[in-house]
Image (tube, rainbow over all chains, first blue to last red):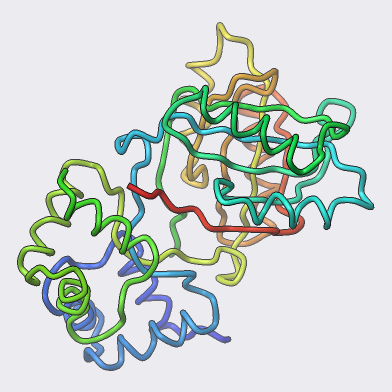
Length: 158
Length: 147
């Protein structure tokens, strides 16, 4: 999909958030010279094309009690990566599962999962149970809990 | 925060309608009025329980660059360097983690080429190496917090 100037203006206009009012798309349109239906049409188009993954809220998970945020990293043999990535990615408590490059010799891990919980102990217990259920005992892994959060905002676009 | 607030949060992490009166449509599903929904969302934004209400963009499809980066910093310098790193507008979020690599941040840039450039700038300013770990394959994305 090729975005035109108006699309970019629309993207910039709503990135900080939609107006919380009865006709949010009309209000956005007023700011950039489009009518409500044009704004709706363009946003729908961008959603269809995957440029907008979704509309909705972003929660501040810390404030909502999700303070035990674990990044679990695994050193998976390359030939097992797809199988184990799919397995882990389909577990209910895993919110993200990505392959990333190793940075040898300092960083041998190539599969990254995120688990967001309210307390460390249950998160760790859950990880132990995953290792057992999915027979991952032979795959080296590490759990990195987050400490302080320094910054949380979305990406910014012009 | 009551059960209606929690229902709102659970619902709006999935989907928000693109129609003339989207809040009206959501409110109906939740059995509350449009005004009530609008007031509650504004309140939760103000209380900082929600960080944002709007679109989640797909960085790569927007033509942008996105990467996860890690650094190993000595404890004594950690705070000062955190400040330096967070000065970069491309740093979208940044967490301390309990590992030899103790700082982890996400870079979001306007073009993929900018990632490398920003990394070099961060290395120059801080004097420490940055390990770049861009996503190679996605097995699952479904970040959602049930309340």
